[in-house]
Image (cartoon, rainbow, N blue to C red; front, side, top):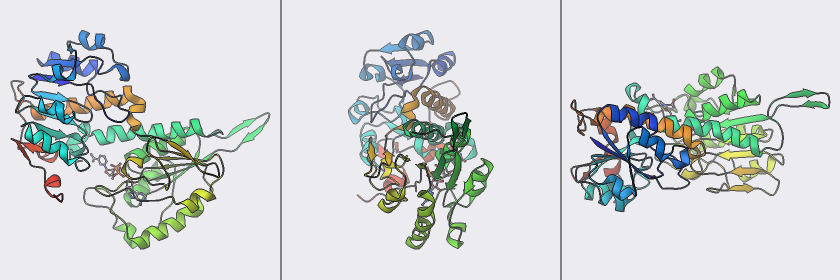
Length: 379
Ligand code: NAD
């Protein structure tokens, strides 16, 4: 099959969907690989390395995708490029489908099958393909490292001849994939680490990383997980109790990392102005949920906002791209694990429509939008 790897665009995008390593494997398996010039440059992978791995370098995305059976991208291509794909071709990427339903419509119109990697069902067999996890893990790590860089003090305790530096207090709100890595990173850096979540399963995971769990553990909490393992939107009463509990805790923290998300809903607001006012000057908050509306009042997409009392709220976008080399490595391996699901025994492009993973992530088929989550959207 002919696989085209394009140069991705999108907010602060530096990642690429294939590495010289994965390209080498594809070429060895008999696939033809075209890559857009400079596709991996911002992730530290040179065209020369891709060429050596067996790829052909194309001058533009349009030239790269010409006659391709399958297009690899990180975010999906723009609608114009989709229009230039061969009818019946496939395209992969984390496409945020419900935020951008027009994208699936453009793919359907072009007769292109869109595989939204962010919709891959979170079943055990699909773990190796799970781009949400591979990228969130890096975001959680980077959030703590970035906060440590902005914070004007040290994270670990230091006992020196000039006196003792007390360890910083780090609070992680939301203990999913990103949050758990943030907790682990904070612990590695020696901070006194606490965390909260609304899912009861998170309590044990937080404790296993050596952090203290802080949450309102009432009856609603005990039933707050969906069958898919995600958080439910909590009642206004729970949110009030949660805010009261966390308010006094937040006031004592030096660094807060917020990662709380609810599928298909805006991010829950966890830190309000009064909490911000209660924090010490120089404290740092990283709002990893800023792209979905933010967990922190006043956080701004792509910016660091400093409040009147000197609290820095970091709202950077596209955290995985801040670690573009590793993020691309992980993303590329996720795609390598996905490829067999769209490949026939003789190596041709042939999605296995009987596979629940393909059914779970295909947005379009034969010129129509087919995914139930998109069909359920109001028109
Ligand atoms: P996510 O990014 O959707 O949300 C981040 C975290 O925020 C979640 O832990 C959620 O419970 C929490 N949250 C939501 N509202 C909150 C609130 N008001 N206060 C505090 N925390 C709040 O989550 P995720 O990282 O994608 O993980 C979701 C679940 O999926 C987890 O149980 C995870 O273990 C599971 N998972 C399973 C697989 C798999 O089996 N293949 C892979 C990855 C994740």
